[in-house]
Length: 213
Image 1: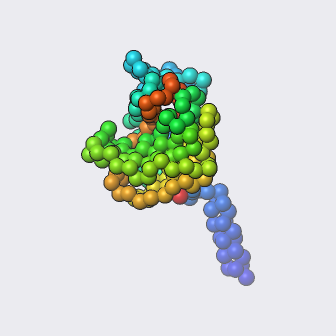
Image 2 (image 1 turned 90 degrees about the vertical axis):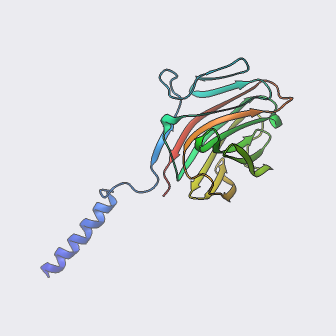
Image 3 (image 1 turned 90 degrees about the horizontal axis):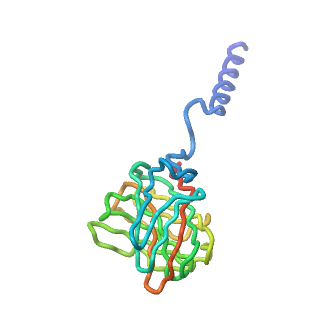
């Protein structure tokens, strides 16, 4: 009888310890985050040229440019990631909707090798990769109801698990594909402006990188 009681206590103790998570973390872990709460000492690039500029203000990472500018920035200080979920708030402040193309970049090896996922305030998205300096379109401009149009913010995310790449906007899956060209690298953000655009202004915020379950 006592032996049975001792066994019961042991089972209860193991269950309790598991519930307290004493055996280590479970579920996705936050690997990196940036809220742009302060400009001083921030590791994201600040600066520009005659036709564009990057700056941090009001808790956001801003980009402004003249038409026909394409600029991206990566942050080596954020780290290197292989399998992960990247989430970014992308805000369209001003510019012609169908000629403005903010994007997130991932698995950046260098400026000749990376993926970029573009989400336009016209309600469309596009997926591209640059490998050995050559651009390839993995998904051409495609409309999706999940994308907020005009001025406002879209929560953009990519889940990279091996060769499988899955893309979300505002919590809805908009595209999934497989590509094994690039297996890991840095993260970044950027924006493009086509001819005929007005001066564009976009902002990025709440950048998060999570481990996968």
